[in-house]
Length: 403
Image 1 (cartoon, helix red, strand yellow):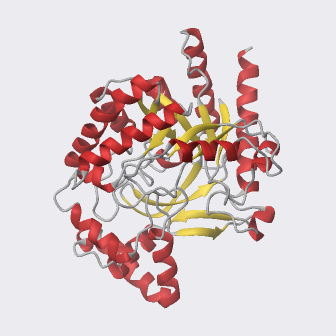
Image 2: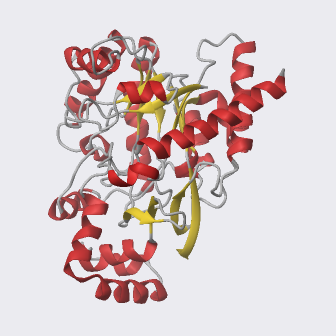
């Protein structure tokens, strides 16, 4: 696999020199300053490529922009709201501009309103470092007592509601504001940054949209853009829901292997593919990474290797969890990597030109001097470097065993 690294641009606290010293082979980036629904101009894409290709001193870095993550799908497209046609046209124009600049992998997601969601961005771990986490009780406290969603109480058990009320009473004003900001102020790479009122307003636009309707809207979106991507030589890859269960009463439709199997069957175009994220999918206790790869690996265009540990409290499949070190969570990372390496070998044997799948060490715990730096939550230098080193070791050992 090609070992890549997510980079947020010149304002990122991590530099291209840092990435090269970590052994990074390629870069994953996006133009987050351009609002969803707007066109990515070629000059903006080329400017980001120039930043990636140079060290801070101006000399060549040897790195290139390999994966766009993400070209966001606007709420207008997800809901088929006003200006839908123009947003689709803008998405297609952005794809054309991305292809013209030589980038061939584009990640996106179809999560409504909230993108990936955590309740604590720097939870203290036993080893002294920090990790991001999702606590179900904290989220329900936000849903009922901060957001005050009208029908929220209908979505949870009496026990969960009682615990959430107790938790909210303990937060205080500062704690409640911190929880609100953690959930809606915008995590790194999220499509949008919302205010509390904007979340309420956007929830109203989903009043008539259930899981079937949201999925239908996604198929309509892909029917428009996937054939264009195919003609352009772009591989589109949908990121799974994170976490992989409904939030705020909203449907989430890309959470399981079965969801992806249906998606690639319903839009059977090679360009329509998968971002295989072991961290997001792995929160589901039924997730079997190697089985997923064996069944659907031919459509995996991009890989996020990350681990999570499920925790109590839980409510069915809705569970609390924290972001574990890459080799320490619920997902068997060794077995996953072995299956991915086998998929790459099969692609080489059949002559596919995408036989080397781009991967990145997704997220990372804050360790060592990450704890004193102002890095983006989930994207520290040392924590991700540790993860990449561990994953690289498994890949090297797997390849050696195959010789």
